[in-house]
Length: 376
Image 1 (cartoon, rainbow, N blue to C red):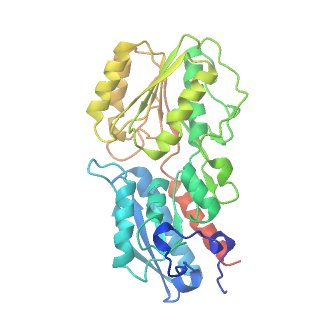
Image 2: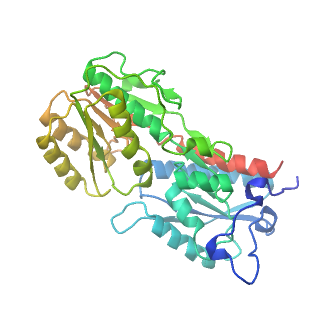
Image 3: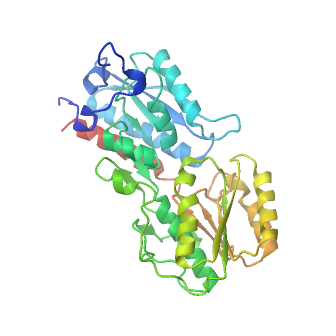
């Protein structure tokens, strides 16, 4: 079956690095990319050992294997590179540097770019020498990525529905503080579909949403729901939000803004936050310990740095108040054997987010959908 370029990439804007006064720079096309019978790709990997990064990477590899089999192409993983800064945090700058090097190192071979998140995907798109329109798939549905999906300069992304997860966190904490039962149900007020199958395990998730040009505008962070009913009895209650990293793109665009917004909308008196550096649990735990001494809090929304260090944070919180409701968000508590930690027996303690398992399948589906559109 003849493959043809679809409108998604037909009008890709020239990147600044690819334009010159000498004429229009050649754009990416499926026909030129696959003329050699190979489909070469690179992967921008986030934090080493991060379960989300592992799952997303594998899911995309599986999807590329599948589309290449269908197209009669040889999949070629040119390189996968851990894109972190000196502190070990996911780094957009390192992703840009990596792709700039890869453009030269794999000249004529680089056909596709996989990124574990949108921050790195957006940075990758600005790499020097990259052929304009080279398809890139990301994850998180950041505002900038959604804009680029709309104009055709990113192939697609996946939304964890962070704003709705923030509403779920605030609702669960508010209901625990108020003594309401159930603490959450499917009519929580958000747009994303909530998954309550593991509520007895103290786990709540939202279904992932594929982000394409057709829905990117509505999936941008900051489109909050309205007409939410207040939870009675919260006006003198204070919420503390603990964020693992002050520079994490996804956290800053979603939870950092949405959690305080929804907490006060639902009736909490105040919503304060403290932020870590993404690497040093001890420093963030010290901030947490000190903050709990400065003000009386009735609930804590907790985003830990190291997944397996969750108990240390809990010990600090419960030393302040043995019954204080806690909801972990985004970064799921993990056991030392790289399996999900069992928090079902810990009273007033839940996790809200997207399970790392399945994120790769969702991101891989974006790749398969992109390919299927090429064959129409």
